[in-house]
Image 1 (cartoon, helix red, strand yellow):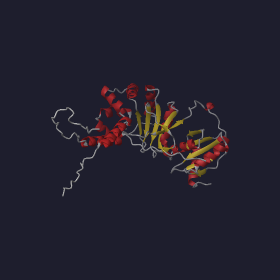
Image 2 (cartoon, rainbow over the protein chains, first blue to last red):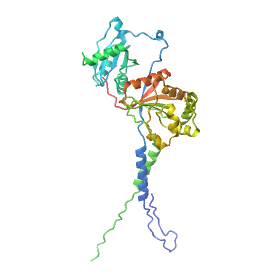
Image 3 (cartoon, rainbow over the protein chains, first blue to last red):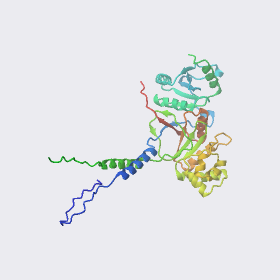
Image 4 (cartoon, one colour):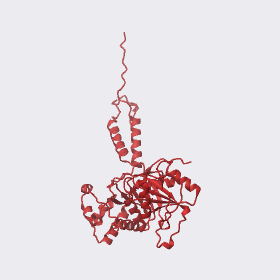
Length: 179
Length: 201
């Protein structure tokens, strides 16, 4: 491209054109080219971050607007400290002396994912309530929301952990994950 | 005996294809690249299997660091100019035109509004040295809520993204989500890294 081949002596005259080399030394250009290339490769951000969409329920103005959740449709996931995860079926109503059986799970594919998958297959109307404790990390929250999308769970909500559930979680954590 | 002529090949090789390729790549990267804005807060986001890409424009980013500091950023320059006017009106802090310009160039920041004016007055190299305390999120001084609300007024098309560090505790993230809900932002996004989606049976 840059080496322009000159077929000298077309003018017909005997006067010989000076046959200097027409080759251009391209080394500086190459240097510059690769310098720019390196610069752009280093500064560019190719991968755009992924995002996860979540929709929170609109905060109801008063309790009347809230729908009662049937105990048979409830499934609660508790996020504890040290990446621990617990779950129980049904509702926790201490004033009616209904204390559910809390079970421990883990983050592997056979852990909470399988449990949620089985539960939602058995009951499509199941609502998964996610309650994160103060000791849990943001990563756990993203992970559990991700499990919801992996298992294709449609109905789930991030709910505040109340005192009753907090005590339930504390005892479960101390019990070393009682079966 | 005739002299054996050693055929002398020129040691300079033809670099044309290499140059072509190099400049092709330069052009490619020049066109494709969008410079990564300088982040005031380094955030290591958790990974998730979601496949939705972050939108290009109109994003309000709330960053949560490992040390529980909360930073706020708006990507659009015009939105930021409108936002700073609204903030100065609401909080009674007057900003000069150069300060507004500096604000419009910030990718994200984490200073309370009371310190914002002095922060904007600093030179850019001094701004980097300042240890920004984060935006107050407690209920008595809920400045993050105002930032989000006024940013949404400044640009109604904007979407809110939370960019939390995976080591950040849940309480701060939960509080940020609560603030968003208070401001009627019930649809928002969590910024994550890529992860391979597992096959489920």
